[in-house]
Length: 156
Image 1 (tube, rainbow, N blue to C red):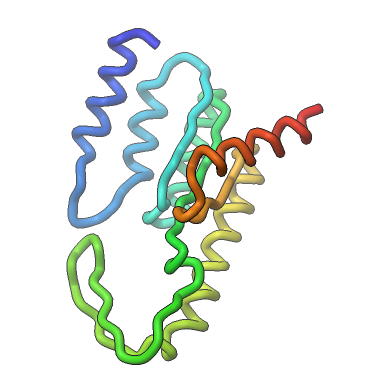
Image 2 (spheres, rainbow, N blue to C red):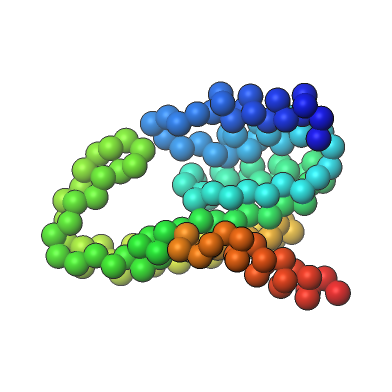
């Protein structure tokens, strides 16, 4: 791309910045408006936003004829909830503390996470968007190579 194209993307990202709440869907909508030429959009994110809002913003890229690949990053602890006994969680966005027994949350948390990933998988699939869940303990180059290998096999 040309420098002005990169500058406009950088500008949107800088304006978005870290705030009290994550709003990646707004950022995606802004980027979709600014990226004029059809291209490949690769999203690498924890997708911490309302799934319906994120999926709507991803559809915006598709509406503009972009190909979209979403790499959903999750930490191993997020995927397995390996906590026991009394525990204090700190919300990463608003820094509030929650004290509880880990066992009281585990089953519900894992079910909610499973539902969330399924919502993203279905929503992306319904819009011809590739969805790839990645554990952060997996080196990204390996995850990318694995994805591209699978994609190559299926596109033949």
